[in-house]
Amino acid sequence: MNGRENRLKAIRTIIAASRISSQDKLLHKLEEEGVTVTQATLSRDLKVLKVGKVPDDGGGYYYVLSETEGESFQGFVEDFKRGYLSLTFNRNLGVIKTLAGHADTVAIALDRLELPEILGTIAGDDTILIILKEDVSHENMTSRLQDLMGPLELL
Image (tube, rainbow, N blue to C red; front, top):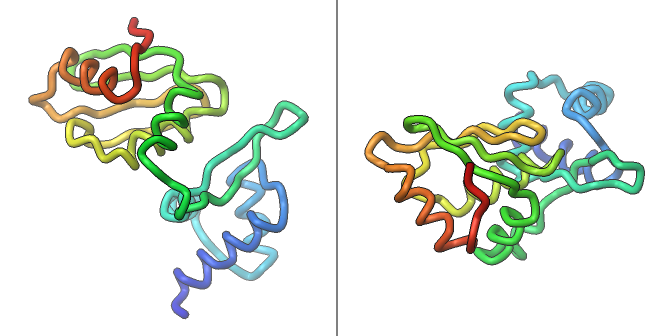
C-alpha cells in the first residue's frame, strides 16, 4: 500500500472505532497512529471517503463513514431536504442556509448529484456557497433544484 492508501485506511479505522467530532481531533488521533497529514489533505480525504457528520445525543455531531453501496439518487435528495432551509443568489453564486451542522451533508448530496450547472460547493457549518457556471441563470438553477427536490424556500 502507498502512503495515501495507508492514510485512508487509518482514517476509516479511527472513524469506525470512535466518535470523532472535529478534524482537529481526527488529526490528533492520526498523529497518535504515526500518520502525518495537513488539514487540507485531511479535508480532501474525508470527501474521498464520503465521510459525513451525524448528530449525537448531546447536541453535537460526529463523523461517520458512508455506506457507498447504499448511496442512491433518492438518498442524496433526502440528505439535501433534511438539512435545507433557504437559497439565495448573487451573480453566479448561490448561498444555501441549512440547519446547524448539516451544511456538509447537503453539499455532499449536491456534489454527488453531479449537476452540470454547478462548478463546486464550499460548506461551512450552516451555510453552503454554490458556484454556478457563468451561463446558468438563477431561474434555471432554481427550477432544476425544485424539479429534483420539490418546493424550496427561496430568499
